[in-house]
Length: 277
Image (cartoon, rainbow, N blue to C red; front, top):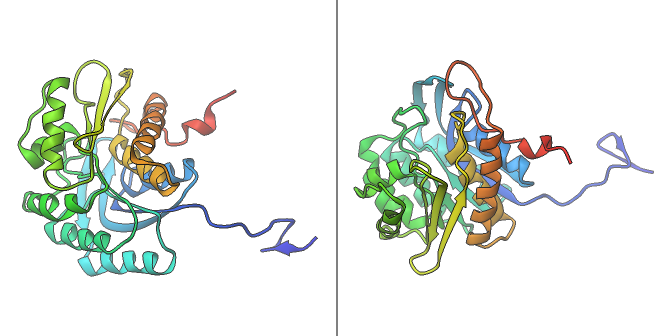
């Protein structure tokens, strides 16, 4: 039997679907690029990354953030897409108007679905997007999104619509869709009661519910959900199917969240590996 790469009996197989995350680094490992790549591994796709910013971050908050030059972001993106190719793109922390506009232009020229997580504020309340970049998100980034995944704070930041109840989520979705994404996923995790999200393209409507879990260890939830959606799209799933599967995955990850450091711990991206039959 021949050996490949020095391992007897191992053959070369085709590459799995490829997903590219364009986001910032979380040195604590719970969110950002680190969460994205863990999610992609757990869901059976090959994760690749374009780093947009470096943060000094732990369970207590963000102590510092440094964005990368636009040319560095553009070079990383072109390097991956032009050689390896992608089946889906996911965006997270983009920090500045210049980065938002550059990434929007790159996505517009890429033949792959894009999941836009319009990250504005960290779980600890730290700003991750310059106020001057909001208009660029509205006019450049959201129009190229296949799915936009704002939470209620981000909806308010982008549209001015404040949601206090489940019944107001349709109005929030309409406001987000007015900027051009094909689908809006309004995440109602900040409301009381069940954890409810609304997915709609303006006509087709899907309400996704899960029991609210009594845990504070939810760092990385938004990054994880968006990456899970992108993973499903890369595997050829339709948007409603990909979002439903992502909701199930992130609910399990929240249930497995664990304490880390002195503050808010992360969700467990590898929870399925630890589930006993």
